[in-house]
Length: 424
Image (cartoon, rainbow, N blue to C red; front, side, top):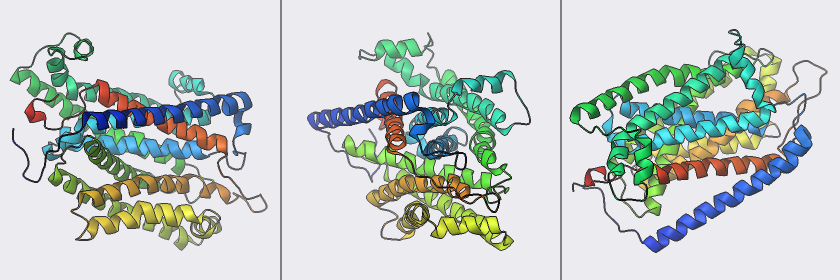
């Protein structure tokens, strides 16, 4: 077995790992159950009266988390495309994990927006009676194609290990055998064909993820002409860069935390390369957000100036300065560019976690401040803060997301740690 000279193997304690797993599953199930109770008691029995949404502020925390998880999904997928589409094999250890997190994040995003819609069954109308001039109708079709592509690409990335696992005497052998759909070919030619399929799927997915999924989600906001701060061509581009930031940060955090829990080594060179990639994406996003604010300020339009004032000095100033500028931008950038911290695995993890938390504020600022400023003089200003029911339901759905990912890691050959040693 060959190991990177920068790695160290530490044997995990089965007892400690087992207890950590029980605590993890138990905690998430508890939060999920509380969220379901809140959903039934508030949303299904009381309807939208259980929220602080109104005609003035029709979008709330569920829309915030919708675009948050859409960004996580698109960013994770684009990162996996660097591996399977462009052959950047130094990141291969996180390839399947990125595809799984992209799939789970997409499911979570759709669940959040379904709550906000209120009648998700009406989505079928957009599919059956497709209005080609509707941005939302296009998005629904893009989402369906994107989820299919994610599942197919994840399957082909796992198939060799599914075949190997089906022939071994393990608890998951029958399950793996079922997933192979009778396929048993592990010849070099068959493996090469699967790699070509992954490359084709990854390349096809690039425009789908950029222009269809996350750029398209940004377009839903950008075409709202009554909100000048949103109605710019740069807004969908900011969405895409923000997706790359959050997806990269998520992949780093999952990889390091999983290895920490299992007392395993990290591929130090890979983590440092991912940290540099995250820093690059952050710099570009910060520049785009600066231009976005500059264009709004330079226009001297009342609506745009008031929106900037609400962002930077209004009642929700803390989401902008603490979360968006602090946790999502400045703090991780300092960590990733300072010589003493940029090569440290714990510090790179800290930068990733800071980014993941801070991006919630970025999404909050994309949705809510623009709704506070009235569209016409004389109309009342908007005012919104999530109710307890909204928060509890949201945390329940986040717990669902983490449970789905954990389940995927448990029942699928996602983990590629030390794959050369015969692991699945």
